[in-house]
Length: 476
Image (cartoon, rainbow, N blue to C red; front, side, top):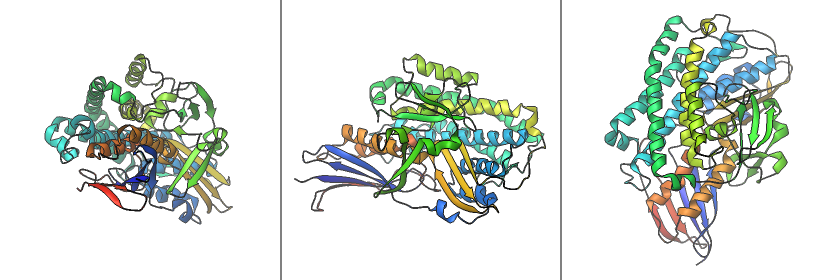
């Protein structure tokens, strides 16, 4: 028998459209895998010619799940073009909205997308292994997830006016003050949100205790990690400098100016995917693989500035792991970050300037380019704009978190496929584990929403002559 290819198409329960191909050798063993992003969005091109001040509202439409992230990165790039420092109340309000986004996005990923696999089992009946099945079998857990996500969404709405695509963040600051009544309402809702986050963290600890061997080897591979940190190395999401560490926790580079990212990173392309492949220049392609997102942020951070989250980080590391390299630990890192986001929300709400009215500075464009970098829920997000003398955009470069993780997702799929895929015995649980690698990274490929229920997947075993030898199909 000649070489064969297994195709999973489409991969859903992610934002966007993608497929996975698994290539087998003559012995039926996995030789290679590819995670294909099969759509083209084109934002970098059709933004050319727009006035730079429009960019936050245009680029927010990249995603309906995390528009807040693009609003903030874009606004920071616009601030740089203006050459201004925004007023402190505006800075606090931006971060408050950001923390609401972090909490709601992580809650969605854990409770709605990953919990069915963890609580019902990777090999469980696919008719039940979905968010609807989770609600039926574990209604309290599902309710807690819904309530936690709702709190994050309400923070966004109260701060910015709308949950999705708010027009709150603008070049030079924000355009809405926070009312005292809105602040007090959020403070009153925090205790329930904290309890739900604590519950989720304990729930996952229990799962990890009983599945340690599988977890530690799940999509485990060597890579570097990148994330923003404060000057003392603390976890940071809105501002800060870039830090890189290796898989042993050794700091490779630190306190790098995010605006100089082009000196550090380069991007490659492949004919089988529309998603670019960023890599560390000094290491070359594809050896310069690195990861971003919750797992990377906890790996690069020296500590967390809020007490409950820092205690959770210390507990994580007390088990003898300074660095986690298994992709599974993206899930627990998200929950630690939810704890941090809720603590930071409380700190921000108790700051006297949070209801201040000095929220916007006006100016004319003074610089030919601007870079805005934040830590979106899924990882480091870069917006880079070049403008002419009148502020019209001449060129745009965007590197989203999923782009940073592109090489890593491909490497993770390969690792899991090698362990679980058996060509002569295709099983639904095998499909689910391959997909679960992608769900660890919670990729955002376009502004689409998560599918309700199970994934409508098809996997085919095809020989070199194009003959289908075996087919396994699942529909919604």
